[in-house]
Every structure is written in C-alpha cells, then in structure tokens.
Length: 191
Image 1: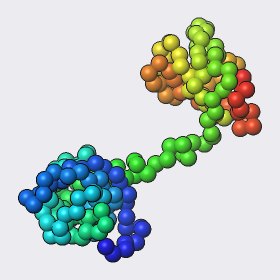
Image 2: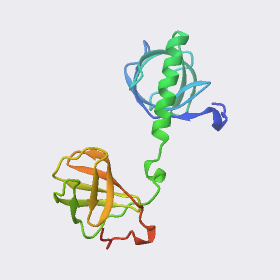
Image 3: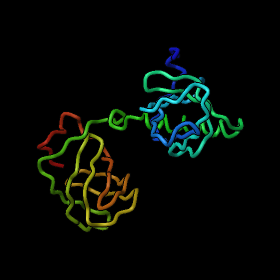
C-alpha cells in the first residue's frame, strides 16, 4: 500500500459485513476514508480487483471493487453512481468528525466527584427538594434529582445560583451563574 498524506485521511471506525462470489461473509471494520477509497481492517484478505458487497453500519449496502491489499488491510472503491458515492462520503465524513470529538478535552473545567454528595436545591417557586451531586466543575454540576425541571429553570444548589442546561434521566446538568475559582473545586467542596 502506498503512504498517503495524513491531511487526505479521515479516520472513521464502522463495523461492516462483506461478501463476494469467491468468499463467504466476513467481518471488517472501516479504518479510514481517503481519495483512494475506503480502507478496511479484516482477518479476511480479498483479492485485488475482486468485487465485494459490503454492508456498513450507518451507510447501508454498497458495491465495491478492491483496489489494494496489505497485511490485514484492504482498500475499496465504490462501484455506484456519483450521487450515491457523494452521499456515502458525506455520511462517513460526518461520522469521522463525530468520532474524532473528545468531549472531555473540550470541557472548560475538569470534573470532580465530591465527597459530600447530598445537597438541597432551591427552586424558583421556593420549594427545596433534596439532590445528590454526581460531579462538579468550576462552571457547573450534574446532580440526581427526584423532581422534574425544565431546561432554563433557575435554581440554587446549596448556596450557589445556577441554571438548568441539560436534562437526563433522573437528573440535571446545571451551569453556575458565576463560575467558581477552579482552585475551589476539590473533593471537599460545599456549594
């Protein structure tokens, strides 16, 4: 296989089931997308110029032709209309971007698990249901709460003003009205 510039490669991992007239079904995983085609990793090694049908998760079934083979890798080109090929490329590029995101590294502040998890949450109407902290950062907190709240609701967690920004099963994510000093965020924090 020839080396390709890294700027042309888009890493994307999707499971696939491939087959041909020559060989029975075999599993493969996409590795990357480039102008050369789609690279798969598999224990099976199809032959160059072999026609394969591949059913790729989120893409669907596509007809391909093997253009190169190397140690448990093979590259295919789509044998389909330009419109379908463009659709496949767009979908794979979008999935590549999604898989490439690092949500933890995108966070503005690291999260900690507080030692004291029980906390009172004051609602806008004055009710004070108990909550249980899941994690805390300088910018907000996630907490389990047995009370249904709407996104955007203003609350007070302990003595810290916040706004609900995320709702999940049995809990919420809240952004503090005024972010905390990161030095204040440690296991013994009290909101």
